[in-house]
Image 1 (tube, rainbow, N blue to C red):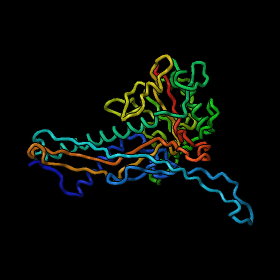
Image 2 (image 1 turned 90 degrees about the vertical axis):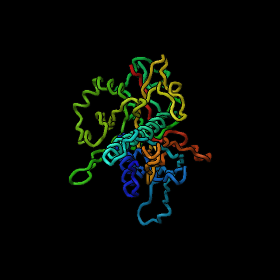
Image 3 (image 1 turned 180 degrees about the vertical axis):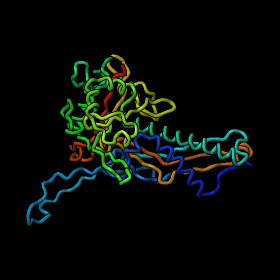
Image 4 (image 1 turned 120 degrees about the vertical axis):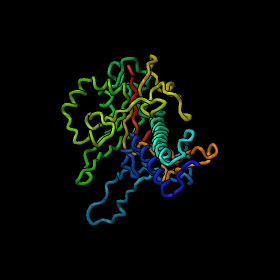
Length: 371
């Protein structure tokens, strides 16, 4: 009979190990937390619970307050809590052992190590890919730098040679820090930066306040050829960022570059205009291909509250030893998962006048040609 795990405590441990392996490979995990100061706002849910999650975006106090011996009620100022609802689903996968490989404890243990890694990689690829797709889809704030250095409206204004460089980063930081009004006179909100911290022997040390910018391989290579970028790297004091930020690729002013690989069937990563559709997302070629047909790479910069994430409180793991007349074991894992780019939709006429209505809350896309 095949050796399968049956002890409930051991099953929980293996389930946690699958998730830990999943998160170790997730470039967004370092920016994820429960508070609104995080780039990814996480809401704990259960695989057996509701399929709908809600976060609340908290806007700043804007009133003047009161002075002196004055009734506080005369200066009441309210925080606006903007509800954002998104759906999640149960995602699952399983792995069947080879014939007879787990008929003794030694081979069973070796197989179990390999399949936990395989399940972790699958869960990472599945969840991270959806994060990249939702962040890149139908972006309302896009930076298009044309050949003459002026700012365009859509990727139709791009052509071969409009590769990623510090012009994109300068425009990104200007919009992130000061908001932006588009060609139609519509104002888009500024972005809140993220506090980067690292753990030392003396506790948690705050390194600085930055905007993470996720950059694909072609764009990163082009960026590093920019003389302005090269000079900036000579002047920058990284203050521990290179070890505190996974995927660190350099700093430009207060943007920290997160190097990413391209999306492939085996690994989630930065998308391109020719990336295949995934789970019903709109065809990216229609959205983002350059005017002359050149493929673009979809880089983006983020602020606090860019992405909502529903995650499982207790991801499940199990083993079924009955396959092939008890000669194989099927290892499986499932978890609740839901993610969506934050874009608040007002309902009343007053709400629809808000700067936040029907706009990406904290995502700025920077498509650039790959050559």
